[in-house]
Image (cartoon, rainbow, N blue to C red; front, side):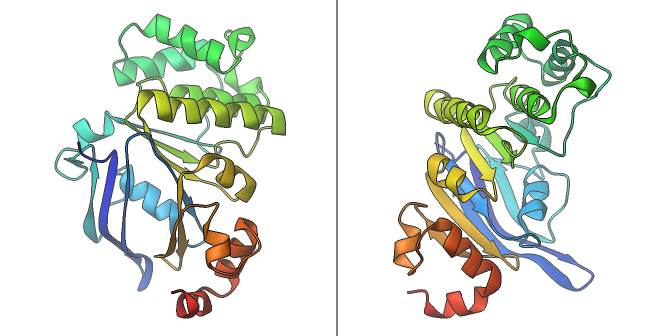
Length: 249
C-alpha cells in the first residue's frame, strides 16, 4: 500500500534564498509525524507545497500514490488541513460551516457525519452559534472537526491545539490519536509544544534552514544527541544547527 504521504527531494527558493532544500520523508497510514523547527525553518513552505498551494522548484509530492502535480484533484480529495490561522467564515454558524465544507468535499451521509463530529468535539451546544463569536479555543475545535469531515487519508495539522486550554488540548490530542489508529489516517503535525509532540507523535523530523537535520522517535532522540529532553534538543537546533550536524553520528 502507498504511504499516506510521500515527499521526494522537495526544493523551493525565494529571491536567491533556498527555503526548502532537498527534503524527503514519508508519513505512513496510521502514523503521526511531527514536523518541527524554529520559525523560518521551512515548515510552512513545505506544508503549502504538500497542499498544492505552492509549486516546488523541483521534487514531488504524492498522497496515497497520487502525484499532487498531475493528479491534483484526486490527491487533494484524500487530504484535509487545520491551523489556528485558517479561520472559518465567521458569519456562518458551526453547523452551516460544516455543511458547506461537507458539500464541497462531497461527504456522503453528511447530516450524520456532522452530528458525529459535533458530539466528538463537544460542539453540540454551539451548533447554531456563529463561528465569529466563538472563543479561539472553540473555533479551533470547529476547524479540526471540519478537517475530519471527509475521512481524510492525510491530515495536516499546523499548531492545532495552540488556542486550547490544557484540558481541551488533551482531549483533542486523544481524539486525533484515536482517529489515526482507528481510521489509519496519516497525520503531519507541526507544533512548538514539545510536551505535546512527545505525547502525540510516533516520529519527528527536525527542520533547520530548509533541511532535515534529525529524524526519529521523539522519546529517544534527546538522549541519542546528549540533550536533556526534546525541548532542549529543539533549542540547540534552533541556535546551532550546523554544530549539531557536525556531531551527529
